[in-house]
Length: 301
Image (cartoon, rainbow, N blue to C red; front, side, top):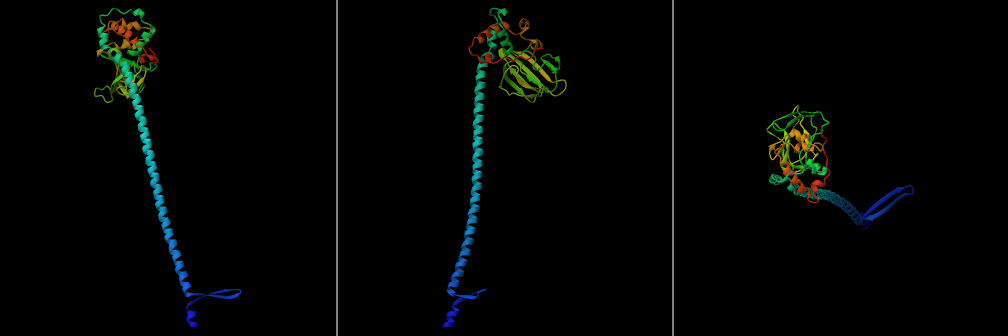
């Protein structure tokens, strides 16, 4: 009986300086302790694995969250930019429409000018400084480039070809609207621009290396429209037409406030009498925005 009790016990001996100490533990307790220890180890392993899995899942969720936030920010910024572009385009369209309506009466005055052919003679001595400046703002005159640049010119049957420094700025010679822009010409004219001015006048700028405006843009006198060609000899072609017919381009280039009547008094296809009467009617239009802009004249030769 005693031998059986001894077999059921587990004896632990501890040896130190004070001698040997022995503790007896029942084998059932030993098994319980071992199982409990195994349980703790397995539990800790499972908890560790679970925590690692949860941490990995949490990390993935955070990554997805950042990706979603980035996509949201991208879409938000894109929509914001689109909205701003729409507003800018709408404002620009409104501005162009307003200017188009303001210019409509002037540009369509061709019939009005022709109908005034038999009107009583206009008193040229009554032309005020402001009227002259208005006409020079609306009709092509002066050089389409800064005359401080060295240049040579040769007259053609229609228009003038200028030999200019390469790629210098080219300016509009009167207020108007870009009617035609050609970037690839098959007629050896390079890039060219056609501007519609008031009372049936048009101006053409050819042999350009670069064009800064597009068709439909409203342009002011002295505004940059492009740059001269980069090839030798043919750097700029310039021409002026009235109702599609040729005019003396050189006289219009030399036209300024000091010799104002020199062009008007010349025999010409232009009915200046009817044009000036029509201009008087236009000037009477109140708050006409075309005339409210500051006038910037190019240097005259």
